Length: 422
Image (tube, rainbow, N blue to C red):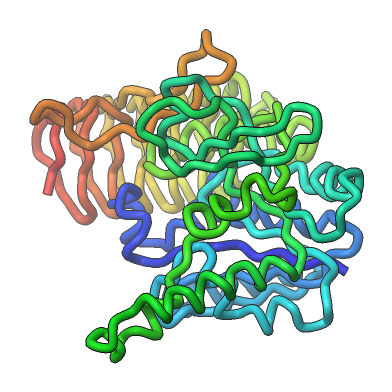
């Protein structure tokens, strides 16, 4: 029997995802037409022995999370529960705190995955890989190849090329260590809790009596990457399964458009019914486009490539949308143009208006390039990035909004470029 744990973080995480994370917890943000987490859950539910999926995070349970869980349970016919941490406990602390829940029913192994990655999720391959390595007590990290410069932004893995054992693990090194990076998807056996327990006891001993009041919390904050993997490397217990399939992080809103492109592309094999086709009386689509059945789109509109249109969206005559996510209830009036942007819930773009951003895609000429998590500002200026409209933003007719971030509930009255509009 197998289980899966998805680490969803909490409200003080996902700050780079603002203003979109104001309205919806980041793990429920729609990527390629479905909540980010649904891609993980679907991959887990396809494994034959998967009995339960646990979400661990420190969001207050709210209506959106509960509704998502009940829909996902019905759709995937599998038990899905949310376990709320009392505080942010780190990637290892959360699973250690809820170890009894994870181990109930005695799973032979369990997956742990971060919610903010987009991947083809080669979970069956990871299981086979663990069996091939013969040791029932070994743990597997999913790895992929990055280029030398970008590898410094990730956990780096030095491996034994013959056995795939992890010999050395460094989280975000300051100089080049290895071009194999950690993808944030792991396969553990219950023995991992002994290793986390050792770190927990050591943390307790290290805390001075003066800090004892919140000492329990401090000892429980454990990071899988820095505290566990670094110690396990080179002991014959940790292995890396390298994938050459797609993988990306979803840290910023710009990376959500790139992740959407990767998933829409995958739909050709997994969900062809989700991709729009050019039909008589329907809008023209170019490349991969997802359109929710409730959207109302004029047949003269041209959409794509890489566009996803949410529930109840209205798109007028002659509208052009490319490389964008249009969230539910938004209205794009006649002849407006939306490129490299995310249009927030219930926002309106006036006639002949143009909303445009700068894509933050990886270098297409480098097969190992990953998306850069750009800082918001560089040299005192806003870094050109995708344009984001928060919820209920009104853009008037015939204006241009370029490389800007507009916070929710704003009525604009002129054009803006390279600005954060508060």
